[in-house]
Amino acid sequence: MVASASLPGRSASEKLVGAVRQLAERSGIVLRDLSAVAVVNGPGSFTGVRVGLSAAKGLCEALGVPLIAISRLQVLALGANAVEDIPVFAVLDARRGEFYCGEYADGAKLREALVTRDELAAWIGGAAAGRELMVCEAGVAQALAEFQPQQVAEPDALAALPLAMRRMERGEFDDVASIDANYLRRTDLEIFAKVKAAAAALAPHPERRS
Image 1 (spheres, rainbow, N blue to C red):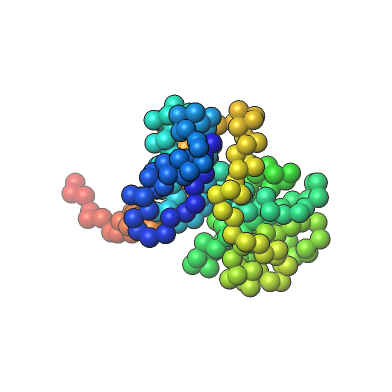
Image 2 (cartoon, rainbow, N blue to C red):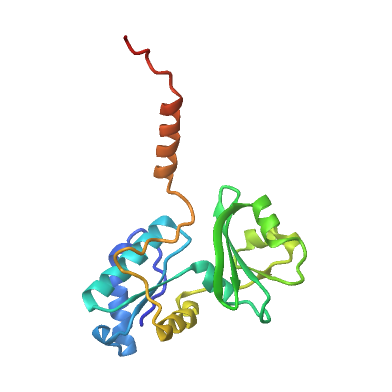
């Protein structure tokens, strides 16, 4: 299994595969000996998630190894120090006044969704007792201060390895052909297409001739 750091700049798609190759060489890893490829498939930047997932799929196809796709929210939740049976919520900024939120119990995903602040408040509840609320962005911590979040450093690729190893040991892999990015939202193109379709449906139609 191999993980790589994020690559800044618009040329990430051009540099990613080469960076993985260099990382493997520096670590003494032979790519064809990998048991699986793990990738964090969102939520996050549309372009970044798409590029990373596409590269992971390509490696799996080329090497003939299975794929493990991991939610960024689940990686964030892994940083909690919650006791057993205490739900853990992880929250990321989705912009436009919305949040990505996931709920987990004993490391297992219960639900992930794109929510408004009011929806988030109703979901997690006001009392801090009986749950953990994990954030990694200062703006989110400030916006949700009344819910007493625990702010931690933003998870990196290595932070996803415990979840990936657990999945690999259990033989829980994703289908390379069908797995998609974990956007938890529609793209702008889909939103505009839906608005256009709704407007067309409401437009008056010429009367049919008898």
